[in-house]
Every structure is written in C-alpha cells, then in structure tokens.
Length: 155
Image (cartoon, rainbow, N blue to C red; front, side, top):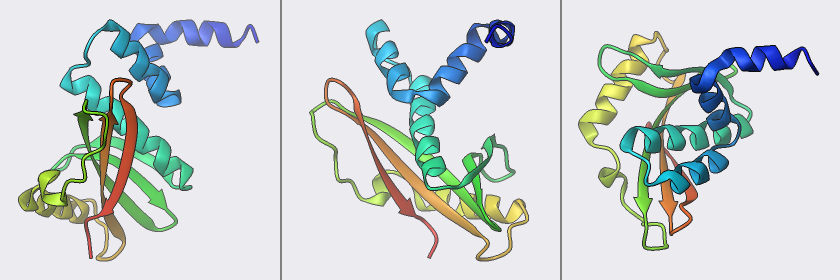
C-alpha cells in the first residue's frame, strides 16, 4: 500500500484531476457544480469521460484521445478486434429537467461528418474497417444527470 503513495503524489494536481475524471466522471461533475458552472472545455471533457466509460463497458479497447488529423480531430478512438471506432462527442446542458430529442443535424453538420470520414481514411482504415459514432451527452436538470445517446454516422 505504501508503494502507491509516492506514485500518486508524483502525479500533481493536474494528473489527479485527470485521473478522477476518468475514474468517476459523475463525482467530478458534482464537484465542478459546487464550484459554479463548468466552462465549455470542462463540459466537453466530462462528456468525453462519460462516452469513454460507455465504450469500455461495451468491451472496446481504448486507443487514443484527441487524435489530430489533417481534416478533423477525433475525440475518442477505440478498437474492437480489427475494427476502429471513431467517436465524436457532443455535450449539451439541458437545465429544464428533460433531455431534448433533437435530430442528428442539430448535433453535427454534414461537412463535419465528411471531415470525420476523411480522418478515418487518413488513419489508414480500410473501407468498412472503421465506424463513425456520434455520442450525444445531455446533462439534464438541476443535478445535471448525464443521458447518453449513441448514433452511427456511417451507413
């Protein structure tokens, strides 16, 4: 047990925050809410953490986060066998107490989908070997309860 303590202490504040976000995004979200409203960057990281947990729950193996590509940045990249899963995460607040059932066009534009498809090709993924996903994360109500919706963007 003592061997863990020096390792954790070497992480520093930023490292501990990143670790807490990955391990328990709901707890991290409640902490941010006590401090005030999260900014857009924090909100995006929280949405990505919830999406990452769901992808891991599906049995997909984590590859990378925020993968820079010439046409577009990929939020999350996972692997399932030989198939790559490129995940674009969109996070919104819904303070009215209910999740909004919005069409996919309200979450992501067609040119952005085309850029993600191009990014999949730039990664060297063969046609059909990569799947594009849009994860809609809505933080609902005064407690900002997360609701996730997965949509496949490729045919």
